[in-house]
Length: 403
Ligand SMILES: Cc1cc2nc3c(=O)[nH]c(=O)nc-3n(C[C@H](O)[C@H](O)[C@H](O)COP(=O)(O)OP(=O)(O)OC[C@H]3O[C@@H](n4cnc5c(N)ncnc54)[C@H](O)[C@@H]3O)c2cc1C
Image (cartoon, rainbow, N blue to C red; front, side, top):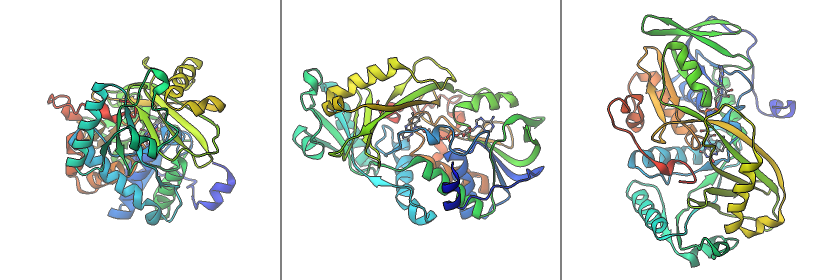
């Protein structure tokens, strides 16, 4: 973050790390900061420290493709993401910060009979559980997004789509800064450049954390560590059902005519939207090989660009400006994990994989409620870690924008 931004956004960094807080949140990404924000603003819990090893938003919260939607594939997820979508709609007013939230509508294109059945089912299920999604045919697709080649380059004909009009984007780092500012103004301390090196454990209870700047005792410790969560959890002898996979994305130069909608194709495994600067932002599926590497690859770029061109031929006239990667915390059922860990005093919000940006407000709101009341909020009860031991996975391939 540069000086200009820091002076505009009133971020007040504490100079001293105290040895004790009521709540210590590990990770200054969207989920950690949102939890701190709602703890302070909704529950008056202000003796809170957020510990971040780099700068806030330096993990996936500042690397994502910013898509916000609620068109998920299981009722529990539809309800949860719909809550987040609604919180996002009011976040500018609530924080007083322009997060560049914009409703664009999301087209999820089908190219086969099987794809058509999946998108029809998605529309019906979304409708039943409160998310606005309709099934539409090629003519309506063409009206919403004339840039789509309905012949799909001759190989991927466009047969229909589910359309989610409330699909939106928001500027990712602005979301992080707005939440950090709101939390700080209410007394939360955010400590950047502070790496967590261990957890303080007494019996079955986690009593605090060790950092490279000293130990901290805490009533509650919450891990919001993105792709690094398994490494810190193992410090308390905890093995999480998470694998860390890189996810890559890229942007092109400016596209003048304007791509109004967000376009996704499950069969072509990519999605695209236009940024406020006019770039076309393209994302895809995770790299199959688990890794902590932030390196992006030419293999990904050429294969993803090739698939995107089949549907959006105008891309052939644009140039690739940047590509990058983040490290995603993937669960076996593609759903997040929120709540207790089985170690007293230690909570976790993880498994946000390739889909957790849109979940930041609802995830933070629910975790703050859990910390404040000690009761698991109904909205996130199905997402507990114990679902794996109880054999109640929430398989939702609709989590990723390409499934
Ligand atoms: C390329 C890409 C595209 C994506 N696109 C979308 C999208 O369009 N829509 C969507 O909803 N989601 C998307 N996602 C997923 C989304 O970005 C993440 O799920 C979300 O940002 C997770 O937030 P978080 O706060 O849990 O993790 P993070 O933002 O990763 O925050 C974790 C923080 O913990 C810190 N940390 C790690 N280890 C330590 C330690 N030992 N000590 C202290 N701090 C530590 C990190 O530095 C980091 O800042 C995308 C992700 C990527 C990578």
